[in-house]
Length: 447
Image 1 (cartoon, rainbow, N blue to C red):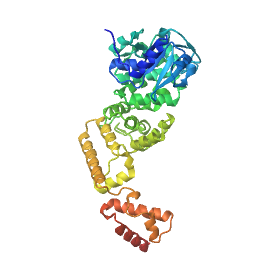
Image 2 (image 1 turned 90 degrees about the horizontal axis):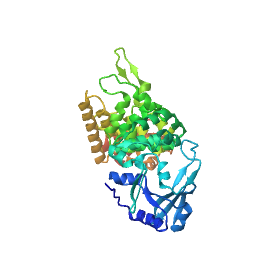
Image 3 (image 1 turned 90 degrees about the vertical axis):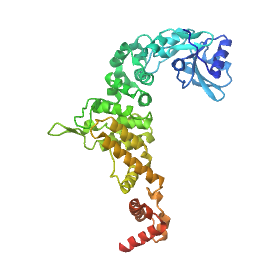
Image 4 (image 1 turned 120 degrees about the horizontal axis):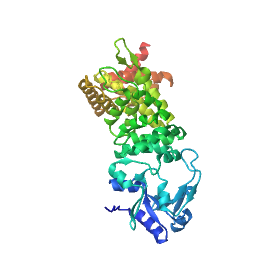
């Protein structure tokens, strides 16, 4: 059955311009795959028999984004489209990039160098779908399969091994056995890939519809290269009445129980990362993991920095890991103190984290824990709705007010503001200038 793809007008214009000039041109790769699957392509790539310089002659506005590898970005109304000349890749020197490329007039040669069959299809309106390696068959069978010999494809570019798992996670496909076996054999080659590249693939996997595919990263030996802490989690059982899974499986189920947000999925992935190191077995053979939240926050921080995550992500995830197991006494003053201590920026995400964690445990006392989380959240929301004081900046007096009362700038003022905050966290209705100034005067007289 013929496949028809509706090309965007700008893509159609670029392809038609190249073809009218006597060159071949097709939409290629992921955009073709996504259209066939009914997904919206993130971008549109075009492949052509025209050389980069011939492409530049045909379009008034171009950018040399990778001209040494045949890629020119054609600008149409401030939107860029990568146009790449058919090429044959030379020897790969760093498990990632070819040392040199050779331009070719053969579309087949160009498609032959691509990673997976589902990414090696091309399309234009004149010729229809060009599928030389069984991409449609593999899509119908929901299979991730290398183009040609998988060992060659993964030896050329080791990152393709992570991409195979990522595509399986995003599309709900399975990795073909020969392809998976090649990954297991070549996993150590990932050591030559930059942390930034690994991070990008890991995040796409974790925020996909099937984050449980991270298990394949472990099974094939890839995580041992860049995230041995996950291997330790996968190999650590939890012999106590609160848990029904080993640590690794628990974090996988926790990820499945939370929405596909980068911060939240990373938090669930790492929230118990310190349990292997904190494991304690009592005289009855019961496992305990004392201090795992505090130790886990520090481990998460180191792991995320090692993988070159941005500072915001490092701070948010490590903070949520630190507090993931903490529920204060369920009285409003205690909740106000908790919000101040944990940090406003961690809410309301913290409640999602705690629920996902709870739902990935045994049913023992699960309802009780969920009820406590709901009460915590309800009190938090009521406090926020009343706009109660939670930080020094919310106090009805500030440093200038204290100076006006005769205090000298410096540490003394900071300590007094912290004292006032502690007082107001217990008595939010007393957060008025008159009450706080009188309290300052009284405290100073008594000292």
